[in-house]
Image (cartoon, rainbow, N blue to C red; front, side, top):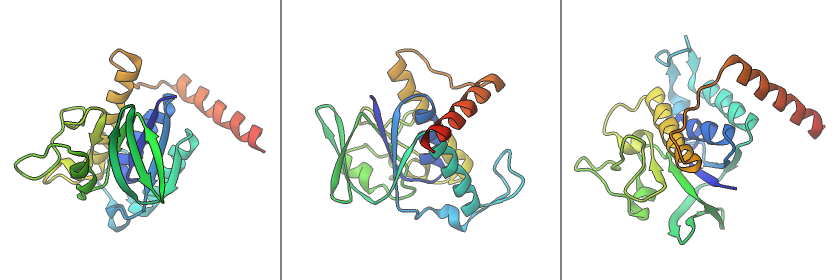
Length: 198
């Protein structure tokens, strides 16, 4: 099964993880919970009147857990290319990945170590799908922006990266457009999974 590793568990990383996992890709998130969201209060996030940043993260983590994302509280110390994709090192272990989504805020060290090109402003250079100069490696959020470090923009970056991964995997342009019937099917599946686990 195609494996996507997301490094970072803020809005960008969790958004990418949500899209890939709910569409059938094995998805793992590594995060140390150092996100700026714990200092934020969201009044400007479309669809939310007011929410504390830490509460937002709790809701987002529950959402990705519900679609089967595996989350690890661990720092990724290295990402390198292999013949088959990427090797991601965390907690003394190496994890293989077909795709990597970097969502580490303003910390661009992993992207630089991987050899991703940067712009004259010193941010990671990406295309409109958030793909870097390294094929199948994506960078999102504050890594790719000198300004506009808004949670909702970062979430959109994560979604764009995930949709491009899904487009590559499906072999045609992929749209993740849900209907009420889709939601009922997903929720019924989650209830069935929970009953099986008990």
